[in-house]
Image (cartoon, rainbow, N blue to C red; front, side, top):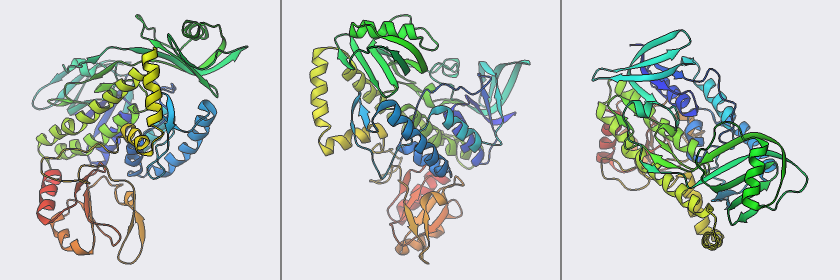
Length: 469
């Protein structure tokens, strides 16, 4: 075979998945339809869980440097560092588990460096997929002509408009667009209509950013937003003229919400926007996709190595499917709150008042970050089992202090043992790294940062067998 796993798509999700597979000791190959990396600023940040996932692989310092620059951009472009739900900017940042402000092109460069050694073939477009019990063959158009690439598994990370999902026969049910938005870094000449909600939509501008949201229109074009197009949209919504002289880093998007009916068809799997599309409200797309890759990568590597049965891959959709559905739910709710009309105006006022309550503010923040989403495991367990562990300090018997992420860079599971549970180390049988500590309770961490055990000896044996063979 040409590769153990063929990854279709060299965006952030595909690159991170490929790096995870390589870390797991198998041979990934990435193909990408674009001849060069995209410079389009589609997204401007990753969430708490994605930040922690990349930090576990040693990318923390580079993320921190990018974040500082991203925060300056955010303050300049938007005039506020507060998070928002449906453009109600009141969400307080979580100082203990921060998200990272980083433009998508910069994130792709960072992940490309992280995935060094993984072959990436550009200007390669998958046109057909043949799959059987032994493997997958992709028919690929390349500058040199048609090629056949074989692999044990294929993962579509080719975005919401990618071909892998349809070629492999996945269903993609959901809801059509309610709203469409045109936005970018805009330069005006002369008077600008007041920002706010209008009977036919919303017009926002602050710092250098401006955008118009209105009811979805048929025949949405592709490509950059032209100044005249944005000016026409401002006129439709506000009823006033605005002279737009320049639109940089423009983006256009609708809020259709769809999710694949499964993330696996035999030897073909989906991750990222290939598996789910939704409104970008709340900036959840990259976080969701990178966590798909984190969940799938170590499982797929273990199956390819022959250390775990193929059935382990069924846990991928069982765990990530509900998380994707939850994002579709909250983005649909945000779209409902962004729709024009006096009834929605009244509802927004009430939601805004609720967000002034500390408990409600935290609820909306957790909703967007996903930190409260808990996986259901095939064995009985209570919290914190099933939750993603935050970064934390660990103190060993000699008083030396390390970070949890110092022990996760190899991509193996980690068994943290306090003094009362040191005798449980024998159960690990070299399947995971054992880290003795004195300052925290015992727990088992999967390679994707999810807590798999925090109980007694019998429960640990079950957890180790379930995830590490």
